[in-house]
Image (tube, rainbow, N blue to C red; front, side, top):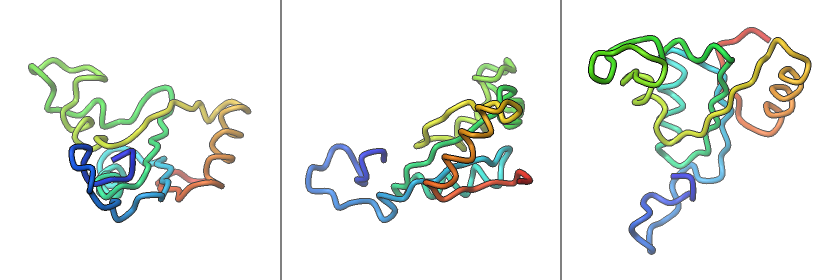
Length: 114
């Protein structure tokens, strides 16, 4: 949970096990996003970074109502619950600076080459 608790309904809830851990997710498709989904579900603050083309999982079915589209992939939505997201163009100087700065302040998770 973004607030670091296990549930929003229970005021006496103990902090989630990974509350306070920030994860910078640069991974895409299934393996990396699944691993960071587990971390986010345990309370880590996961920030998913996508390129302007989006995560390839957005193009994998099944799709809501059987209609393909970048916001309609059931798999993508399943893998990215409990996360925040940002789009960064790593091909621009500003995008490279943003990625570099962010990776210094979080636990990066990636399959990208440096």
